[in-house]
Amino acid sequence: MFEQMVLSAWSAGLRGMPSLPLRVELWDGRKLEFSAEPPRVTIRVPGRSALRYLRSPSLYNLGRAYVEGDIDIKGRAADIISIGNTLAASLDKGSSRLGEMLRRATPHTRESDAQAIRYHYDVSNDFYAAWLDPGMVYSCAYFEDGTEDLATAQQQKIDHILRKIDLRPGQTLLDIGCGWGALVLRAARHFGARCVGITLSENQAALARERVARAGLQEQIEIRLQDYRDLEGQFERITSVGMFEHVGVQHLPAYFSRVNRLLAPGGIVMNHGITTTNVDNRATPYGGGEFIDRYVFPHGELAHLSTVVRAMQEGGLEVRDVENLRRHYARTCAIWTENFESQAAHIRTLTDEKRFRIWHVYLAGCAYAFAHGRISLYQIVCGKADEDVEQLPWSRSYMYP
Image (tube, rainbow, N blue to C red; front, side, top):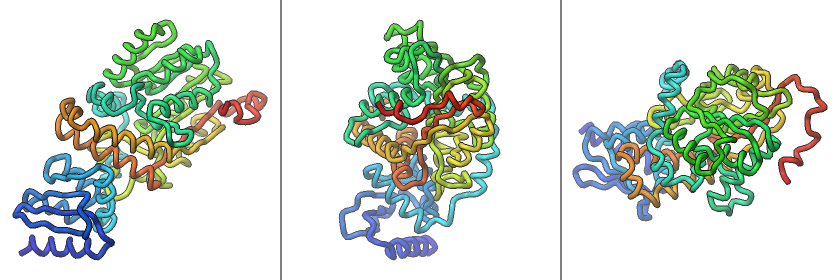
């Protein structure tokens, strides 16, 4: 009787909404339809115990149920995420504030940060190669008009960054969070820079070193398995692409202070990173942030742009240029999702079913979040706050040849 009441209340809530191309298949053979059109997403509930996820269908609960195998979901990832957001928005009572408080209380030590990085990036290099571009660039691409293929847009992004920092031949460049080395390879080969790239991922470091050796650029590029807090020396140019999301909001002033110490007088730094659009630095709604923290990016935190700019100033850096690339990242994630689904059979041979399901919904979820303004991406160019004004450029023309 209670089970029937739950289903009736849940169904009534959904049927009071606009048509939803969703089918729910129950363990006893019953099917619940919520649209006259063919369903684009099917949720299969294998037993009574799984009904609890439907009673409170937050993105965290639905995502958890799917990746843990408590329910099964069929459909394109983009449709799954769209319908999941509709369910969460209509029936969820709000994401867990306790979960958010616990995430913020997590200390960002060298050991915990290294473990989090290894969890996310050391799946396998073949896993990432299956859906990234050939250069294995795992960050927002840059589209001139939106028609470019992913490889072209990723190279455009790297060149866009290197032009923004006005990289010159012979200059020293530090890339914090260098990934598989695409940026430092481009900086050395085409801009003549002398580069140091650091990462906490053993898999990334190993492949990046192989790529440097194959390119014959060992004299210009050094790849280190190193924490940014242990860096010494000074560099004329510094880039950080898709890394500062791992630092922690409370640690951003200290992070940018360290970057400032590593930046040579007259130098330029560019931070390329994801931000929340919530001015209070809260996670994305309906439990999406909780899902990412548990299954994708442990201890990751997103700050609002205003928080980032303040932290930069507190760290002794002056903001000189800010560019919003939210549309570019929505497009990037959509392409990654398409690549992932087209290579699904191959990817399943590279990892277990749980991780496959995590990434299946995560990439599409990111595309949705960028497209709907829940998160954003900013490139911020900085210099030392006390630089002589005569060293500042008159315009941005050097960025757009």
